Image 1 (spheres, helix red, strand yellow):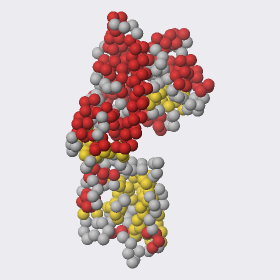
Image 2 (cartoon, one colour; image 1 turned 90 degrees about the vertical axis):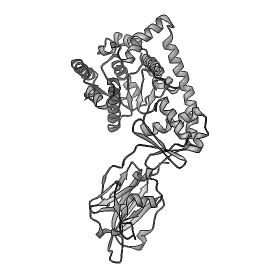
Image 3 (cartoon, helix red, strand yellow; image 1 turned 45 degrees about the vertical axis):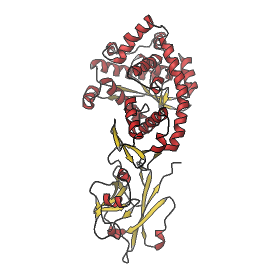
Length: 460
């Protein structure tokens, strides 16, 4: 068992010396074996281990027993553990999703949040070879494409699966030999869940009546397709450099003339690439969604609504993928301090000075404005523009809506939520990157100025 895991770790570069690893511990055989193996290897691999247990509150007393087991097991191994409780049945009802899907989504959400907030390099989960077989079959029955047949990735972002080349039989024999107890979830016997039916009935029937080697056959197919998929994805990435771009605020822009000239297999993969970049789901949408999107793009449709609150809207000869709504978080701005706006990859800064004409000189890759410091009314905030916002652009008599002003500047409505605004108690001070309001302009009476600047952060 240890040798198999070590080989997997080294072959796929899953862990490196000094890594801080968060282990998902349910209390079941797979996660218990994973924790035990990594704990035995931690000195040789120089690992810092912690565990996370999520009590889904689905099986009442049994769930509490699992939680207590995980605490005791980690105490014996001297591994810190974090316990999270969530009423998954209530959450599933609220989100109108199944229990399994809701529990999985919540579990991965918590794992990633804790890993990001606490400096974990990796998140180790206990999927094994049998899970891989079940996943491939499950996706076939749902109508998956080529990418779905690859199954569970052995690593994805921070997620790693050191047991993916170990069978369930290996795991159970290991735990028996090591005299390690584990929790058993009796809901795994309920064949009303599709995965349980595949595991408990379908695969057993296939092994008995069709091919006893079905597991190794499916695993070989998945491994073969993985290598081929990596090659195909390299082509997709090259074509994406030509036909896909990203706006300052993260909208994905697809050049339709180029896109429509590609073969259908490449178009489908590019659409998955675009939609995955917006949704954060590495698997992307299902085939029906991709086909609808392909038809919309190739026929230059005006737009289409997609799952996950994603919108695709045509702007000229581009299809723009985005999530509607204001996305710039409202933040307090204090002159003398830099304010980062990560949604736009910009930094806003300001400093109060005695007025000098040379302050108006602009710097490369930045935009500077100078306003009268006595004509503003702090505190300041940087935020998204709101529908109906009005201001008086510099040199103009009367006010106009921000939307109308941006329309005059030929800024597409799709991109207006990417225009940040600096406000004080009296309203808009600076439509950042565009114009200041007339009430704060420098004139002959100005003595003190506030020099404001926004700079784009380099991403290259």
